[in-house]
Image 1 (cartoon, rainbow, N blue to C red):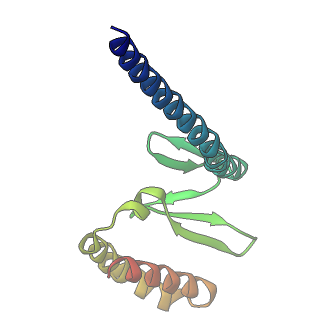
Image 2 (image 1 turned 180 degrees about the vertical axis):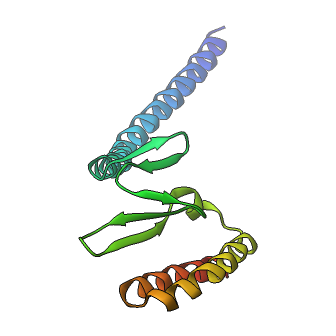
Length: 140
């Protein structure tokens, strides 16, 4: 009978030792993951503060700003100075990876912007060519 109790006691000590070691492993992993979690959360927080300072808000899955004027083909225009504007693509346009769809947008823009750029010249011509260049990069 003593042999049976000794075997059961040894088995219980083994199981308890394994449980304690597993618990210590989980505590160490949790302690090591805290800095990584704080870093990633901090980066999201910094990005959120930067967006808020620029007047960008999140509506659904898209980012939207009151400081820019939105145009067709998912483009936006923001005044930079008295005679300058900055042109770009909105959040949705940057997430659409289909080049064949962008080729259609590029072709339509070529149809409209090429004659316009030739007619106005100067800074507006440069802006039109920059927009066409961006569209060309998305259409590849």
